[in-house]
Image 1 (cartoon, rainbow, N blue to C red):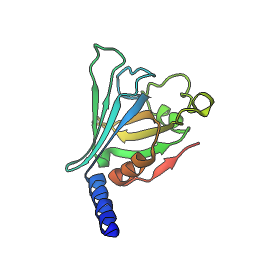
Image 2 (cartoon, rainbow, N blue to C red):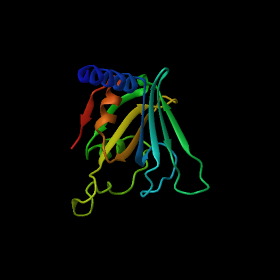
Image 3 (spheres, rainbow, N blue to C red):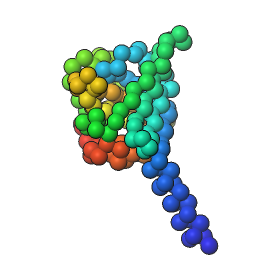
Image 4 (cartoon, rainbow, N blue to C red):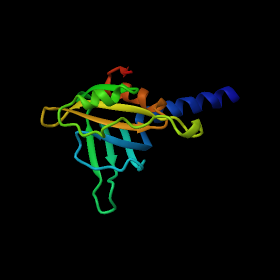
Length: 159
């Protein structure tokens, strides 16, 4: 009985992961999207749906009176997915990317808080130009595999 219920839970989790996934607690650092986000604001949301295949990134603005910026990507638009400290440089190499002067610190005070990682998405914009998004997350574990499955591109680790 336990095996059957564990199997049903695993199948339900896989079906849910294949259908839609949503990640919150993301800090938008910069890229080619013209929005000013606060470095202390972790209210960006990334959602992947399978019917239709689309990735939606909603970026919260730095000011109260600013408007949320939304980006929609198809799997065919994504060129590469980069993780690690080198993601800052890879997104910074894209023409028109606006990033801070220095990459954010990835370690927390005395190691007491969760460690965060950088994740960059390089994609082809609607106008045909190369574009990029760089964000910071506390845990990339589920998102990296979901982005690989969504885009069909392998996750690159850049040092």
